[in-house]
Structures are given as C-alpha cells and as structure tokens.
Image 1 (cartoon, rainbow, N blue to C red):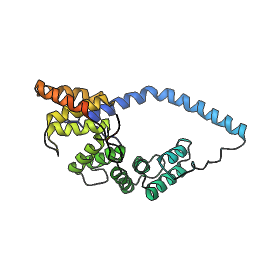
Image 2: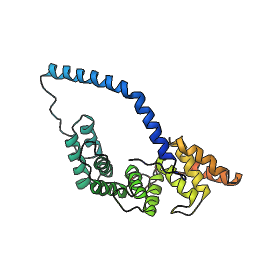
Image 3: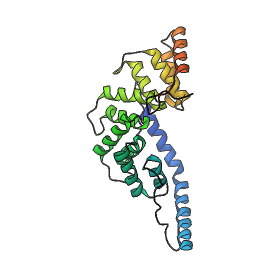
Image 4: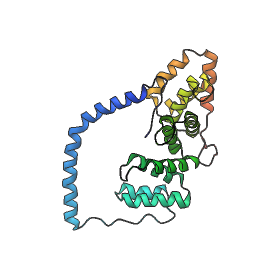
Length: 242
C-alpha cells in the first residue's frame, strides 16, 4: 500500500515502471522455481504421510508476533484470528496494522476497505508508524475515505517523527510545496536528508538537490544540524535511545 509522494507526481510512476521490467525479468525463473517447489512439497507429504497439523500460537497473549509466527508458516486464517484478538482485546497496534494491510491488499482475505481503515486507524492511534504511513496514504489518495490532505499530512508527520523513511520523504515534499503545512525549506531539507539516511534515497536524493538550490549555505547548515539532532519517537511517545 505504500505510496511515494512527489511535487510533480513522478515518483509512483517510476516505481511502477521499474516493477514492470523487474517482473518480466524474473518470470521464467519464478516458473521454474514453482515447479521445483511443487515437487519438493509433494516429496515431503509422501514422506510424512500427511500435511503438518497447524500449530497453536505461542504461549502468552495474542500479539503481532504470535500472529506472524502462524502467518509465515502458512496458517493464514489462524494468523488473522490471532491478530484480530491481539488488536481487539489487547490493543496491539502492530497487529492492527497487519489486519489493515491484509484487508486492503486482499492476499488471504476478501478485500474489505472499511475494515482496513478501522484497523489502520487503530494502529496509527496506537503509535505504529507503518499504520500511520498507510493511513496517510489512504487519505492522500482518497482510498476508502474522503480524500483529506490535512489528515494525510498529520499522519505522514507522525510516522516521519517515528523514523519512517518513506513518510519522511512524503512530508518533506509537503514542506517543500507548502501543502497542508507551512512551507519550510529547512524542514523539507531535513526530512529529505533523514529519508536518505533511513534507507529511502531513490527519490529523496533528487529532491534534496532541488531544495538546496534555493537555500542559503547557512540554511543548509542549520537543516543538517536539525537532521543530526533528530531522535525518533517510539510507540509510547518517548524518544528512543540512540
């Protein structure tokens, strides 16, 4: 669901074009791998005499982690049930994010956008930066909700301040253009720089160069210091130890 903003809306198109070429290159390899995997699974079932009986979730309260343990082993229904219990009964923000992602992407459940919004909101309000990023994307694009650029900016900023590199890039584009936030080139520079250092250099590097052309040397220096002094906030609202 992750969406990359850009002042000229060029970022997402670049991602889609790259993905198309990549998929064409790996098609033949994937087909061969599927044949080998099917043969291996058949051999395993023959040797064991039956498919593995689904294991119970780990002991302890339901959580994102216990649901993920089931999911990675292919027990998708059990994982969804575990995450639902974790989110609804235990207020687990990470489990809520997982449910929001599953109900939107429809990989193992039927697409249910209102339910996706419900759980992304629960996760975002609980401080999960992934849920905040995805919820911002929903409001940014009007997916399942009325488009609301102010709410998008709010959740991008929340996620950015928790260390999400994609959200740092997204909110930087908004500071650069003054979209739903007061235009601030130093903050734009700071968040672009953080996005690059956080592992999202693909578009942020170009935008960083663009904003630097309209800034003074002192402004760039000050913005760089702001980035160096930045400390992400954890899910409980406290700054993380460096």
